[in-house]
Amino acid sequence: MDMKYAIYDIVNQKITLMGKTITDLYNGFETFKVLITSALENGTIAFDRWSDQMHQLVLETWNSRSIQNLHEGIHVGWEQFLEAWLQAKCTLQQYDLNFVVDALQSKIIYLTGNSFNRSHVYIGFAGLFVGSGVGFLIGISIKPSSITVTHMKAASATSYNGAESITLLEDVVTPKITESNQVMIMVRAAAIDPMDILVASGYGSFIRKFLIKHTLRKSMHREFPIILGRDCSGVVIDLGSDVRRDININDEVWVSLPPWSPCGTLCETIVVSDKYVGHKPQTLTHEQAATLPYSGSLAWLAVFQTANLNPMTAMDKKIIVYCGDTGTSSIIVQLCCYLKADVTVACPSRVCYFMKYLGATTTYETETVSIDQLLSAAPSGYDYVFNTAGELRYSLCKQLCSACGMVIPIGPHRLPSDSFGLFRGFFYMQWLRLAYMFKGNKCWDHYEFNSTILNELASMANDYVLKPVLDKTFMEHELERAFKHLQSRQTIGKVVMRFSNLNGPTLMPRSSGILF
Image (cartoon, rainbow, N blue to C red; front, top):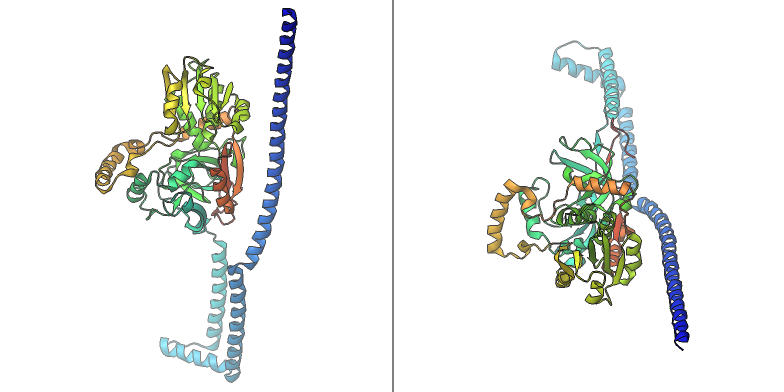
């Protein structure tokens, strides 16, 4: 009987193992099918969107008010010309041309006292016409160095009412270079981040007001509208006199800005300091590149600066990324796997297979997982706990941490100044003035964004160590749909907005090359 039960157990184990294998294969096939279907749908949608956009653009251009005004102007001008010609013709018929010339000659002799004949008058008229023609030709041959428009499209917050205040404005004043270290960039694609909704709800409002009033008063005079966006990818179209020498006109670059920055990236043209600008990875498109700068900078600072990990110290370390459904989480997983660490991810069920694809050793579904299950892979706790779920999950992450471990919060740090009243705000403003003079933005900046980090991320992307996680791309006129998709909590990675730049500023060809 024992032999019989042993055989039954072996058979049952084989059947269970076979069933699990078939289930894994089926899940993998379903995931592959979803990816292929999504790619085909996105391609079809992109083509339809492009064709509809071109058709709409042609119709809008033909039916636009400016074209109608042009037609009306030409018609009115032609009628006025005909009327003036008829009047001139009637006048010439009433007076003999020789009589007019004689009268003009008499007037000149009376005024100057010199003797003029009819030949002098004809020669004077001929010289007037020839000189006017030469001057006209010289004028049209001299072209301006740059042609810019004064307004642009921008995703902006018109108040601090959250997502309800976010709208696409088409008459935002195009920024200009006012400092010698600034770079003007034509934005091709910009990522939409949950931070944008926080900014539209008032995050960093006190510091932003301070910067607008005391450091950007040359180019900005009011708080609203606030241009949203933390990162983007685009092309350099103009430079200040003291910009870094590795940045040139027509370079493809990407940008990462801190949350309190008054100027965002969700617009057609931006002007930023060169310290926030780096060269875009050559292996990525603008849409793919736009997913990395802000989230990548947060992840890089958390892994290499806060956790102080490197290829030597990270070896075999137990690391868990809690609630890994954000763009930052996917980059942290890739960086830790690159350092050969043992990475566990607690994330929604829809993201589990994707996190394993990025290199995670173990994944748990946050909808059903318990703390005991999370600790099953590391009974004594994890060496590093990266918390991307916010302050609400800090106590749970603390329980997952070992005695000598570290909990590393990722995401927006609460700024006490946002809740200051009039009295405390006055004294804090005075302190900011003094601190800014000596420390710059380090007095309130938890993470210092700079081009060095962007260059490190670009190098990793070019070496295929770092992969962009692009969920979906929208055009600028689909802003409302893009933010609704972001708030649906069904995204994997980053949502990106692409700008067509049909009305963006352009530059005439320079000696460094032709733009595009």
